[in-house]
Length: 191
Image 1: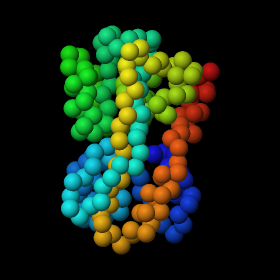
Image 2 (image 1 turned 90 degrees about the horizontal axis):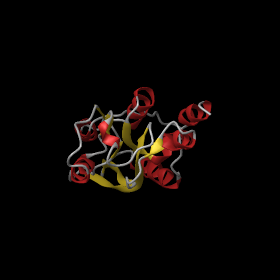
Image 3 (image 1 turned 90 degrees about the vertical axis):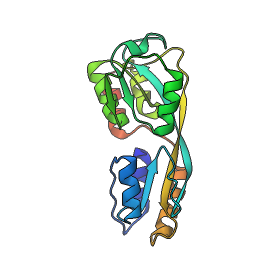
């Protein structure tokens, strides 16, 4: 989303933008109250007034600060990132007997920073961790499959900003996932 935000703000003129990381309930309320025009989430909203559909997939990989395998990775400082309701169910099915997470967070960037500083492992977007894997600050956990998470766009069907929302959606569909500039620099500085 970081790269998409840059493309959208460069392409649309005459608009003000707000980028926040909010919980599902807050997004739902803000859309209903018309204080938010468009929301991106890992679960669709099932509200009659909203149009909500998948626009992308976010590939997640299990990474660790030490080379490890799926049997041992969760034994040391596992950071659980809330990638949505469906992720929570699938996570419980995939990993029924792992210890409780050392840390829970709602954002991948917090998890990345924590794992890099304190050690441990987390499921993070492949595009986010790529430079850290290349610089061997992080390692893909052996035996852990990539995990594709759907990304949904939601907005009011009768929004007064429908034309701009559809432009945003169109722009996002043309953006390829990329590592943010700051993360690229951090990965390169470790080399």
